Length: 280
Image (cartoon, rainbow, N blue to C red; front, side, top):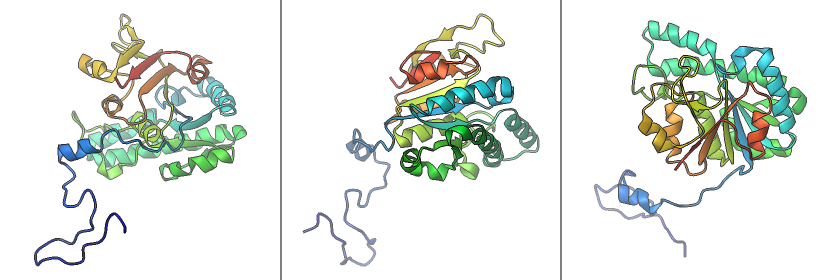
């Protein structure tokens, strides 16, 4: 006899139900949610390395920075499973400035900004074509096991597909879920072993090191400790740090300087470079 069966008899005014453990629940009761805490989830690509190449910190610098990094990531893809995720950069800032000036809603700004990181993904996939680089869409993430079996080096854009349904920002109107967040969410759903944010600084600092020469690098910190510092500026999106506390698969985020050759290789080989932000 099956564990659950459809209820076919009901009294007038009762809802139609299919018997299950969530029957009649609103899905917000805390004790119900806790009953599912700790359940093991499938890790679709447990040996995956998500490498996010920032637009503002990497791609906007042109061939002097980008091409050596392309060579490094391409060669690493012969040894490691890598998903390359691209940021937006200067053109995102331009479209956001125009949109903000015209009073566009946050969701519209998110739609506009997403187009830029898509363009960067196309260019990066072409630069990585020698290593079987292939541009994929966010809807293709579940195809990664097959694509890796075929020897593909997948490249996708980092903007998460919230689009018009982007969350309101805590401060201002700039979309809070941008390309760092998209890379984090991709790593989480795929069960990746590494999430590496490639920037133009040596890690996370107590202040913007380009503006404050006395800023100190933070080599290792937990997400809660970082949030408690309430920094005015960070090299990554605050949303990533907030979600890291509750992630099921991603337990740390690594920030490395992509302007120094070898840093990505060092991290994927188990070494330390830049900053590690830990879930706890």
